[in-house]
Length: 433
Image (cartoon, rainbow, N blue to C red; front, side, top):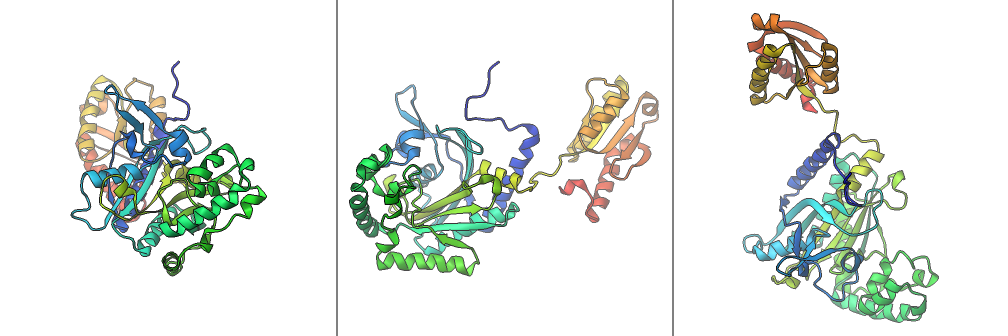
């Protein structure tokens, strides 16, 4: 038996509705904030992700799926969405007509990491990117969009962890201080951090191995090295969050996992007991040089991304049902070949009119067909055999009210539609799910 590759999974029919509902919710929230959808390739030229030899993030150094195509070109399966969106922004000159371009994306990403609950080698990511403005208020808007999505999914207890990496001048001073501090403990650092000390000392603060060491806890904090301009900018972001009643905690060690960030970086946490300490559900930050690094004009940007599997897990653990039970409008129990032929005709007319229908194609017993109608959660069951067919009649049962009537087969569509419209008027129709 051939099985799926490690770190991947199948989304089965009963689970797909949850994904569809999540996607619908994402689109509704993005419309409220006027973000437009963009779809980029699943694989890109490797240069899109491997731009900087000093990039020490795990995603870039360890986790990308890289290969050569038949023309010996370097190709990488996208490990995240921002770089591909930035490439599309530059290549298609989206900056020409829109001084501020607000985009969102959804789709599969690929990272070669250890699979665990809610984290896979192929996973789905939703993200937003706001390009063209350096305003601290658009940083706050992106964070608010993320919080709005979490609330729309029925999750209430949200905390924003936030920090500022400052501008280039502030980061340069801070990096020198970090090199001096961690250089004293070089022999105690993990192998990754020894490399980070040379290439990007900021990334040491994101280390999961050394964070409990005393020298890690006594490391200098970046807020002590922010210049006045960076401090003022960060305070404006915080004031905007205050005005929107968004709870936040300033986390001095928050640097995020990608090396192109500057100024605002943040994580969105939800209080879900099953997540334990790993309760980060979305994250992002500002990047002002990524567009120019990819050959475009100097363009400020800020973005955020969510693992969609994590969102679904959070809603599930919190007892929220994104997808109410599936149903069909009508299940046809047609007894005999002539009745089945007529059922195919009537079902087609109903489907063209927008009603979902099903019938048994295995010539099962009457009892088994009733069971299948129940399994399909049919609102109406239509029953007829060759005797009823001779008079063009059928028995139709409303499974919500248990009412049963005999009507003309020619009236099945209008009968069901009338019933659904009446039920909808009093908010009892399952089609409102």
